[in-house]
Length: 156
Image 1: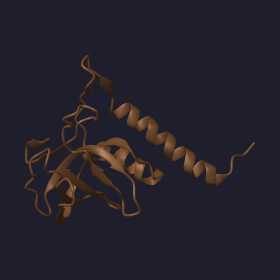
Image 2: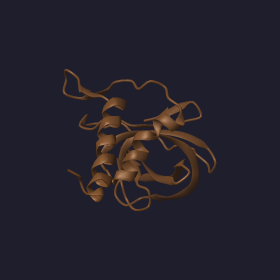
Image 3: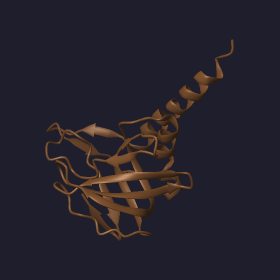
């Protein structure tokens, strides 16, 4: 029995996302109810961006991802509500993402266009490539902490 090709196109990428993310990131609750990270082995940019690229292809949102890439554009800060530093990162030849970094919870990252960064946070898909937010700690310990690494320093 053949499955319709449209169904395969939607189901297979979603399954790949689940498998890759499950293997790449493990979240385990600590004894005090906060969320703790299990370290992810150091990986090259291609490996780290695999879950992100797969999520983008499958239009998946709400997953924790690691991303490596170059800053291609600095955007004005979003000062509506919580202050967010914003910049665009190219993570693949055909994929750029918006990084939205909460400056009320983490220090500003002094990135410039052309700089290399590593980012961990929650990916949200959109038709422009998507965005990563939650690139900082969560004072309420309800969300997995994220970060931005830039020139050997981690901003969280």
